[in-house]
Amino acid sequence: MSATLVIGRYSEADRAALASAFDPLFLTSPADIAGLDAGLRAGITALAFKGHAPLDGAAMDLLPNLGLIANFGVGYDAIDVAAASARGIRVTNTPEVLNDDVADLAVALLLAQGRELIAASDWARSGRWKSEGEYRLNRKVSGGRAGIVGLGRIGREIADRLAAFKMEIHYFARSEKDTPGWTFHADPVSLARAVDFLIVALVGGAETERFVSAEVIAALGPRGVIVNISRGTTVDEAALLDALEQGRLAGAGLDVFLNEPGIDPRFYALSNVVIQPHQGSGTVETRAAMGRLQRDNIDAFRAGRPLLTPVN
Ligand code: 8YV
Image (tube, rainbow, N blue to C red):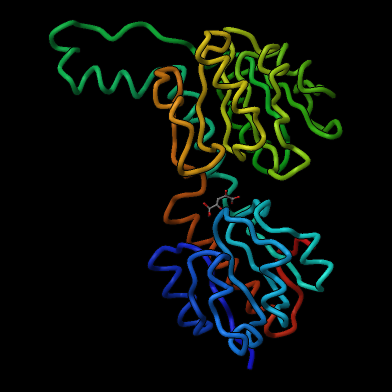
């Protein structure tokens, strides 16, 4: 027997598509695997994974015949890929199909923060526009200096969009790219010093933990704004909160946090932070494409064909 296990919270449409394609077993979190009986566990060869709860070697050991973990998401930092490789388990993700949506949200966060869209909307809705007049002046974004931390697939989409906003484009990446007119910085402190708006588009995981450090935040300075659409781990969140509270940073636009969804309540008290509930890829269209790619990888694995988007 060769069964598929599905872990995570899926939309109705994805759940239905997974059910009709694989007749799988559904669980909410990796912690639930231990509750399955040993016979069921031994029959599982493919796992459709979604979410940010850690999937480690101990969980994999509970599934002795597992051959594939198909992740729903481009970021696979929740999965211990080294542990999977050591057990001969292949891992796939869903790159490319979400680039546009995540880049769109980064631009939206930048504009919402600079133009104070949330507070200005409240001003109109609450009747203050009518009783008190014009909303206060805010901050111009077009023509400013943007720094992209991580010029991968999503970072490049963000940079292309910001170039259309007549922004000066600076970036940090592991190596200089062929991007005429954009300025490469080999170190993030130098990047932060050169710009007003810092947009974080790094991959998650141990290697990039607190990459946007207290030193980077200090280099950005009191006119600086940080936008993060990557992972909460990539920014030193304690340093970010301190700087925002003490006026050493102008503001932030954040789609990702540590300990989602139970984020640090200090964020809620900050009117200069635009908060989004990790919804970068959260459109009907993109989530459908991500689900399709996840299922196509499982189909390929089951048929013995090359995986579409392998990670290891
Ligand atoms: C999540 C994401 O995967 O693709 C990623 O890396 O962060 C998101 O698209 C999605 O929310 C499912 O958990």
